[in-house]
Length: 444
Ligand SMILES: [Zn+2]
Image (tube, rainbow, N blue to C red):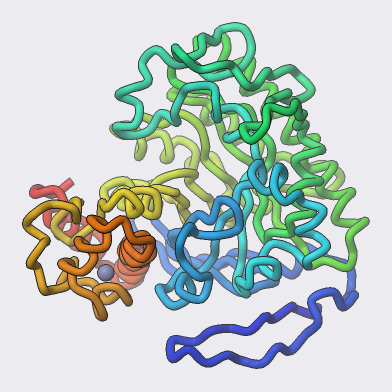
């Protein structure tokens, strides 16, 4: 089928020619245009592979940087391509509120709208709908430390963090929520999430699921998981309907999301249910692993899920970018990852280096007329000194965010690229030991 190709920026800044009109009608979209192939295996579960989309391929494992509102804050899409990002992820919730999925559809889809020629992902909107304004944070890593009194915004066993108004209510049909922008009331259902994500036009979309936290009761987890299962069936049906209707667009993959919090039986059941789910021949093209994950149990929980999922479809782990978490997740059989942290912390002057995370506003950088990280090959480290970036932060100059985001995104993208290479060469354990020892002071 015809594939839209926008100008592709190469490392020397030249552009390739535009070869196709983004709105030329073509043959009906079909799952045959997409796929996943395993190219190498390592250990029990780790694998390297290639995801094929109508906008290009993604070599996995791969880190997918987040551009929440169709932009990785402060960085040009061209720079994201230059630093090796293979795909970008935008948030359906934010794009629905502003500028609206219909407008993005009119523009030719997310990639065409933002001048990103490569593959794109969107999440379902569920995470933001159920978490923003509700005063709780995703239960992973140290972020949870401050949220011990927080609960999910769902249903009856919730309690909203002090000082926060509850902005979402979950029922069996969907979620009613208030816009964080102006307080207007909106409603998401599985069907609406599919309509929004089809309008946005990303190559990889996620099913609408109910987010829970580790703080919810076992009984509530069971209830929420069943709701997510029923919503997954509705997502597949609506996705099939929209795919048949929107023959002018390339096929979009739909990945089901596995919830179940910290419970082995629930995680395994969810993975079996969604892995086998088939609605009139429409199955999930891949899977997301979502929800509450304690850092220390990350590998165990991902392992339960990948035990049960079909081998021949890719798996995305939502929301990780820490060095040790990436190795753990790959070893447990996850293929792609996204996280907003590299850009978010960069804007607050925190940068990743081979030997750990540091803050560039520290006095020790005032006269460091050398790169942020001597081992880094990013545009920032090959053109600017730490002293200059330190100055930009002190002077509150916008360029500080741009330079540090480029560095942090390159750091994570490159690390996952090295992990992929190590799976192929058989050096995964050696790389894990060396890089975690360098970063944390002792191997993990
Ligand atoms: Zn760098």
